[in-house]
Amino acid sequence: MRSVVVVPTYNECDTIPKLIDQLLERPVEPDILIVDDNSPDGTADLVRSAIAAAPDRIQLLERPGKEGLGRAYAAGFGFAIDRGAYDVILQMDADGSHDPVDVDRLVHATADADLVIGSRYVSGGRSDGLTGGREVLSRGGNLYARSFLRTGVRDLTGGFKAWRTELLATLLHEANASHGYGFQVEMTLRAARSGARIAEIPIIFHERRAGSSKMNWRIAGEAARLVPWMARHYPSR
Image 1 (cartoon, rainbow, N blue to C red):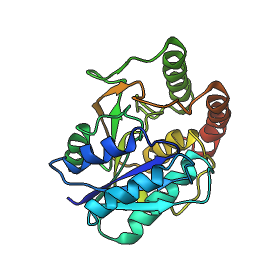
Image 2 (image 1 turned 180 degrees about the vertical axis):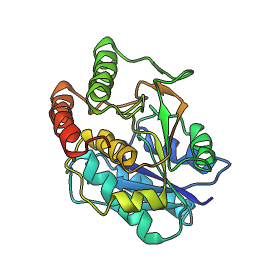
Image 3 (image 1 turned 45 degrees about the horizontal axis):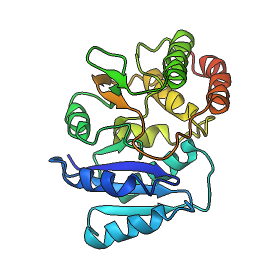
């Protein structure tokens, strides 16, 4: 199956070269699509240098500025779908919290699922190295979303996923209400409510390797306020 990994970036010059190198080494040979929100630190320039070395595997989608994680992913997903070349579209963070080695496992698991989630909260999964505040934010946010939405998915807030392109294209026909971190929850919820086959495989989630986290209590609060709306707007059948 031909696959592409969509990676949103903003000020990830310290991590993006290594991530690209690691993804290019994966046995499933994914293409790479970097969606950069006009990073002032030169992230896009580093991606262009990588493209010069591997023009058939790497693409860069540049956006004029930060408009939210959800909009960045939606733009990247749409770009990949329009290529008409991919069976599987993956999403992952640029900061080293997701291990590129797991890309192969996610792609292979789509043979029996429409959406595969790299999960911290199934047997064998965990988070490593998070500070106390971030660990509370992560676990608490996930439990909060699960209690409202009751999808059976254990890691609703996770951002390491592999989508069958057919499912993703169907979901993108309707715009999401969430444009920030709530996008992760809303997309998984919509997939569950559509009857998609969802699988979770264990991953180890790491604290970011460099730079500073973009997640904070304000951003988490914005996502939390949308969860009750999601429960009403996408009721279980």
